[in-house]
Amino acid sequence: MKVDFGRTAADYARHRAGFPPELPARLQALGVLRPGLRALDVGAGTGALARWLAGAGCRTTALDPARAMLAQGRTLDEGLAIARVVGVAERLPVATASLDLLTAGQCWHWFDRPAAAAEARRVLRPGGALVIAHFDWVPLRGNVVEATERLVLTHNPAWTGAGTTGLYPAWLADAALAGFVDLETFSLDVPAVYTREGWRGRIRACAGVGASLPPDAVARFDADLAALLAADFPDDPLVVPHRLWAVVARAPGG
Image (tube, rainbow, N blue to C red; front, top):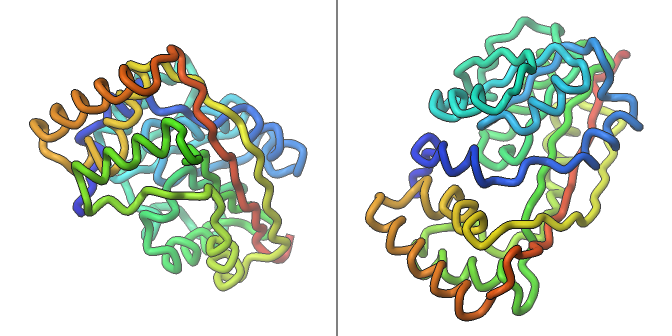
């Protein structure tokens, strides 16, 4: 399944829930997010995590391979100073030991993970922090997520994103094998609220729909999802369970 989030950049920018404030609050409590840090957000998309970094006073760069995603992000910055660079996590256009913080939000699974972890280790100064974070919907028996995932698979059987728990223990091994130390994780469940129209837009922006299906197939899927919501999930707004999970790892020597 070929995925190009640039094809769905407008829905992505408008409808995907960004990270909740609980994420920067936890990072600040851990001492890895504070004013003045030089920070790079890789796989930044439209910049939801980069905006938290810039808002916390970091000198922030957002890096993504899709120009359309970076362009959409600029429309959401509201005066925040965020540099945007086209590039990939496996070959960072950054000098060795030049960063204090490198973040990867909702994207680590798209990378060549060993290469991305090695690059993160290269560009972080001693004591610098790598943060890999996710904010995933959670399918529970009978809920709107489970029903929506079944519908996505009906339209796109090649999609592999269904059934997530929102937990990623393999990412800990990636960091450890790259030489990071002082690894720690946290997770908590935080609901996200969507209108029914917003949920349709959120799903159009997922890898299994707008980022991989042709436009006519996306339109057919969207019509079927609208019918499903009207029949089985009439509440508006919808309260959709999500799980926040992150690993924080530090470059040795700090």
